[in-house]
Image 1 (spheres, rainbow, N blue to C red):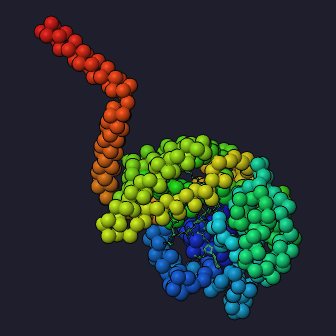
Image 2 (cartoon, protein in one colour):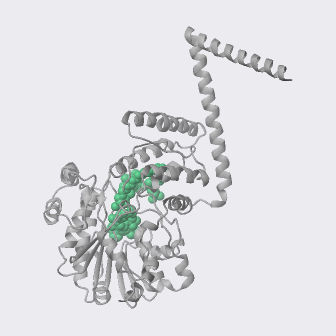
Length: 491
Ligand SMILES: CCCCCCCCCCCCCCCCCC(=O)SCCNC(=O)CCNC(=O)[C@H](O)C(C)(C)COP(=O)(O)OP(=O)(O)OC[C@H]1O[C@@H](n2cnc3c(N)ncnc32)[C@H](O)[C@@H]1OP(=O)(O)O
Ligand SMILES: NC(=O)C1=CN([C@@H]2O[C@H](COP(=O)(O)OP(=O)(O)OC[C@H]3O[C@@H](n4cnc5c(N)ncnc54)[C@H](OP(=O)(O)O)[C@@H]3O)[C@@H](O)[C@H]2O)C=CC1
């Protein structure tokens, strides 16, 4: 049997979403571990004032590609960008490019998607479902296609508690939904979205479930693999530990905790042979790690490697009680944010803390569905795949999460958010630690002053408080006199 590296030798691969988080990692891994791959065709759109070419050249300068660049400075020659806007008919690929792709592509990886949890249904449907249909049509025109790999999510069927590696019946026939949404204006679609998505939390998981069904419909014509990752965080080992470039999933919450703007949070739990092969890529069943443990390691990691200019010391205590949670949001988030914004105003600066907290609460609210429940994923196909690999491939393409050391991983993850998301320098750590010590001293001083103030108010107003105070002071004096007397006797 050929090794994976041998399999890819001389092959042409088409990748959608190559400019995204997972797509970039895939491109890097193929270039590194399959150096004889013939070409990687990537579908890219112009964006944010940058042309397709500028975006690709910028992407290839990313630190992620350091080892590939070192091994082969001409690696960019293997990356062939194809202009494409996935929401347009025919993916807006030019006829010449369609011809080119039809003639040469051997493997397709479909990574592109909108992963926003608040995406309007029409747009999520357009990108996650209709674009997938369009890509499948294109794939059928490819004369040498060997596999179509669709990246889904382990949460596509999050309305179920036990999830097997099968395609479940879709919540609605995608074709019918597409037809009916076509004539509706955005307002109506927004109104009926909660009814349509039913027991799923957002349009993302809903449209990803529809996309799986759409892909499955082509199983007689194509060799299909559906990959369902759960939560993808920073890189584990390759190309180096801790690479991450976005705030998605738990990353934004980790950063918020590190910056000290997440003091209390709602209870979060552990997440714990066919023509179409589905792979549930999850770790909960084989190497579980609880959200509570993650919290502990994130906080201690950020205490060792603090983020710059933290608002407060890293913290994120977990509570399941709604009222306590609301209390802490008020006392620990809104009140300090108001004071800080007032301070900024007085200094002639723009207030920003309240805006940051509001955004954070919105994000936490959207993530809560996933962090507060448990799912059980069957991962037999993943185990089967692992058992079929040669020992060399198992090392080169290691996805055995049993070997993952969570505390070490979380440490690298937190450092990764500092270095690659916030672009902070590791040499600033002593100054950041000094800043944390200053924050701790401010907190101690503030708490002491607060206690003294409250006590003074009590003493002024209550006879009982005065009596207690005199009793305690008296006790202290007696203790001191006893201590003095006994030390004089010993001498
Ligand atoms: C210590 C605690 C330990 C416990 C932790 C527990 C955490 C629980 C987490 C559970 C995670 C579960 C995830 C489930 C994943 C499903 C997996 C998938 O399939 S798919 C993957 C899952 N998909 C997702 O995760 C997507 C979830 N995200 C969303 O849906 C949206 O971002 C949003 C609705 C949350 C905010 O929308 P909106 O308000 O419109 O804001 P925009 O997005 O437009 O960003 C505007 C700007 O702000 C920037 N920025 C963003 N966040 C932060 C931050 N935290 N801070 C600072 N900045 C942040 C952002 O870069 C941007 O900057 P720029 O480009 O302008 O310069
Ligand atoms: N990240 C995670 O935790 C998980 C991700 N997944 C799945 O993995 C896949 C990749 O996710 P991830 O890399 O995190 O997502 P990103 O948001 O980082 O990347 C999305 C990619 O899709 C492209 N894209 C979006 N809209 C269009 C469009 N209209 N036309 C052309 N390209 C477009 C983006 O291009 P551009 O740069 O131009 O915007 C980008 O390359 C998705 O299918 C997602 O469902 C599954 C489970 C977990």
